[in-house]
Image 1 (tube, rainbow, N blue to C red):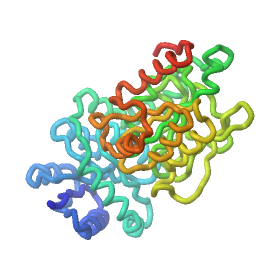
Image 2: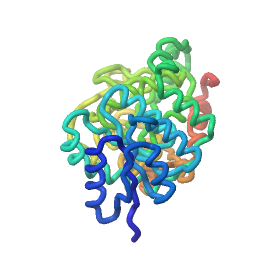
Image 3: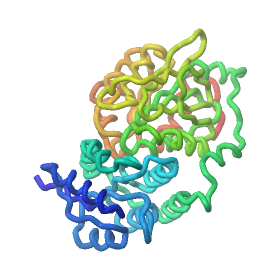
Image 4: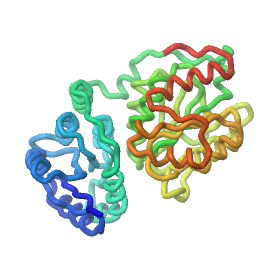
Length: 378
């Protein structure tokens, strides 16, 4: 079997050396080049035709976002971003995922060498996933807009948009409001899921039932991710906090490095955010969220499995369906990685499979048809 051919792009000689060593230790991959900036990288990519590149976010001469924007317009290929665990690093990494990067590795600000050694398995797993991922050419308008949005000096932040964008509140006194306090949507996602979840949430009206989301992300990134979505969606989006009431018209994202589940307190749903051992190698784990959905919400639950590698959540989604929940999965053609949806389908957990762009509208129509109350038009 041919080895995965990787080009490393990073302005740090130490990081280039470490990533090269980590990649070359793997029997199924080889580092064929290491570039100190995007201009050198451009020539390497042209001459060496790698399968995957790892790309630093902040570099001299041309930053990683500008380079990624050009790359995904002109020569789309699998990219794994290497970003720093800072608020700025998180914001820029989310823009990179919007531009088409497959995944990212969060390197520490200090103790970089030891930190990268500890992340070796994570880095190489993500390179393997990227090598098999479905890549799409980015439309020029999308690339330009996303690249511009990565520079906060020119574009309002997600937090600013969220604070200043008016939106209707979900009513709990109407028939829909009473419905919304009972029904609850659960979403699980991994590789490619940040953009897939955004696609679903932006299509939901402000009075949609509560949404709980487990997206595989490390600590330090989910707060920025939630704020970004909150600035784009009609529903409110936030990072979940332990013990808070789960309300209609709101979406709650599992904090990186912690498990999210749902509990019942009288007539209310309550979010539980807790530490614990990884489940299916993940923390947060979709399995944890979906198991609680089956146990607590039963037939009032709706489950959605989006793009991602592995099988996290598949068994628990079957438990949701067995408890009376309605469950669906993203189809293979629209997934970046058709792993988690495929496993959920194989487990007999899924009633419907459909393209990503149809999931949000279908959920709205499903509630209209099954409950008999009108949701607001988006």
